[in-house]
Structure formats: structure tokens, C-alpha cells
Length: 216
Image (tube, rainbow, N blue to C red; front, side, top):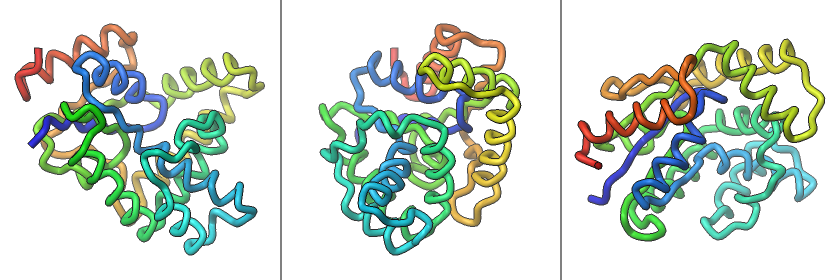
């Protein structure tokens, strides 16, 4: 089996930045699984449909491929997309269709060396047998401050109170959903990045990976 690194955690915990850096460092393929749910939402919107309609969302999920241009569309990065994707992700049929997508990616990662997947159920559902699992977290307040900085840097006028409230609502929705809730796998290493910068988080993660799967 090719190496698999499973990285889970809530929004703005730093898992996306960390996952990309780890993948680049080891030459592995990277998949932001949250972008799949955002792409389903945006696909339905573009088609003039309602993302809350399970049949429309499922059709969009089935049509998604690794080559789909929508996966790199900048419209996937906003908070509106994140909140909508969290609702789409609660649909069991959509999750099942995208689970097949993720399993295919792991079995045949671009480059053929290994894969790094980040999301909310990688270590528990998508790749429960992954030899290396990290659960990245941070306090809601710190995560909200990070997201506000990111959004304001992109030119969006947002308030900290609004972002914090949305983040807490999303955390509750993701952790309480019946299918594949946001939870750390029992064998995942818990990495709290509340007081860590990007470099410190990367070094801490690499130390774990050296011990788990012998990566230098």
C-alpha cells in the first residue's frame, strides 16, 4: 500500500496549510476533501438548482472527477461556500458518492508516491487504516481570528463576532451529524495549533510522521 497521511480537524485549525506543506515536502499528492463538498454546492448553484435538494446534490457529486475544473475555482474558498458545504456534507448519499472519489484518489494518487488527505472524517471513515493520522485543532477564538484575517486579506468586510458565531455553528453541525461526524480517530495524534505558527506546526507534524511511518 502506498503511504497515506490522514489529517482531520475543524475549520481554520491550520490543517489545510499544513497538509499542503507536508504533501510538497514528501512529494505526495494532496486532496482537500472539503473542496469536494464545496464543488458539489457550487455545481448545483451554477446549474440553477437548490443545493439543499438531495437529488441535485447527489447528481453533482457523481459527476465530479479529479479533472473537474470547478475543484480549483476561487468561489470555493469563501465562508458562504464553507457553510453550504457543511450542509451538503450531512447528506448520506452525497458522502457515499464522494467516498468512492476519495478511495480512488488514495489507490491511484497523482505522481504515484503517496497521498495526504485533509478533511473531517479521513482518519475515521475515508482511510481508517492510514498508518499516520493527525487531528489538528485550535480554540474557536483563535480559529475565528485566523479566518477574519484571511477574509479581510481577500477584500471581504467581515466582523469577528459574526465569523466566530458561524464557526461555532459549523463545528456543532459537523460534530453532531449522524454520518461521519467530526471527531478524532482513537489513534490520531492531537496537535493543537492555538499557540503555534505555521513553521512550528509543520515541525511538530513531521516529528510525528517520523515516528509513525519513518518519513524523514
